[in-house]
Length: 299
Image (tube, rainbow, N blue to C red; front, side, top):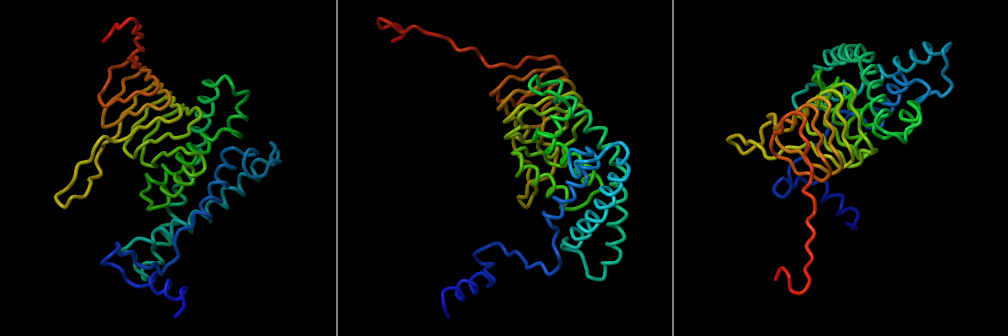
């Protein structure tokens, strides 16, 4: 037996005594590549001409949008079906029912696309109005990574609400990989949401964000600790912040735990915050104090 054969044998043996046992999947898994293609199609329906075919005009808008939505339906319904088959309790005999349910859920999702487009239009406006470097809405759509991350989140969130397994997480992690912005699909984010720069932003699963909120790079809206059940497993309880309307959070600030940041508050950069603050607060770092330690002063 050569080295390669030994390695293959070692990899395929059941090492459950040394490693967590991960069963071999005998059914087709959801495909990140297909979901990435689906997202491209959905973006082209939401922002025609900026994604997908660049030659869309008013005369061909309905035609191109129809193609994008139709293709999105077929790609997404297959991925939802595969995700349902991926579940541990799925049976081969359930396949026809799962296929029917996947199609029904996909139609329900397609019905939310006008809502997603409306929300994304407000998000583009929010980013444009808060960035003097932006020259047009088109520049924001075409160039800003935050639009890619927010569009993936908006799409994934609607799928999350429909209780579709696995797919929402894959979609937001695709954006996380591409942009460095990590938004859990379970987070609730209101209208007119702006992200400036964005790299390193983390928004946890149970976060609630109101309307007209702006985040800068490196902001973390995370949990402070977990509650465990009797078996020692972390419980899925509300554990992330509530950010009310018209809040701005500047770069590299961490807001942790189920706390409330009151409406109209500004949180400065590099702040560590684990307690609630009332509306219209200004949370800033303490200014540096200069000490002239000359002639032995301060000793």
